[in-house]
Length: 292
Image (tube, rainbow, N blue to C red):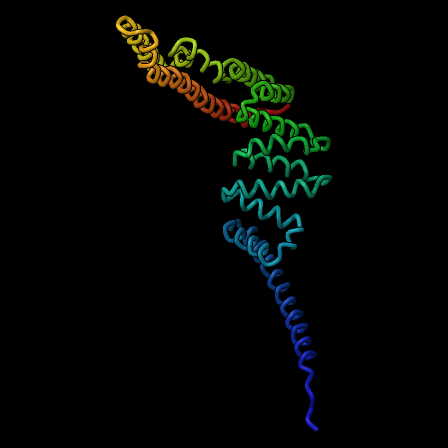
């Protein structure tokens, strides 16, 4: 009597065997890869370690529920200059370890890398989620300093000054005096009101550029608009005022409004330059201060 084979049962058993053996193989591969990645990290071979940690994530994303693996990947990304990735990883760690002793460390790392990646708005909006109750004085001082830098780049001048003033009590007398001088200089010269500059140019062509000390464009705008108005006046002698206005309307509007808009663009560019200058100067001073 021929033996009957149940192909469905055979197929099911084959699938189960494949699943179990492949799962064991994957687990072995993951363990080996983690060990190799940790070894590379210990030898400061950050490029190789970074690639291996990324491979682990691809093989089994669930493995990255382990905070140490995320921290190692964040460390490698930061050292390799991939600050946008490091910012994302440290943010994950901060969200997962809200009551951990490393919470403040992860927050500061998140903000350091976020500043380098220019994630100013996202960092500013995320402040409300930061629990500073477990920060020590040094950590809180650093966070407030980072917040001041963020506010500079967001043109929140008064808020930036407020944050910088809050760190003064934690600095030595000499460093505090240096910081106060820079704060006062920033308060006086750090803000460029581009709408005010545009309104000045609308009031008198070239006046906005003059306020920004751009004497060449100021004189050009003033002379060009003066010539156009003079042409309008001369033409109106032989033609009606309406005809003269119709003739000169296009160039007058173009150069009058264009000059005002140009002064506003100039003010915006000067504000960006000012922000970057003060941003770097505050960093230069803060990195050399002595804390009490």
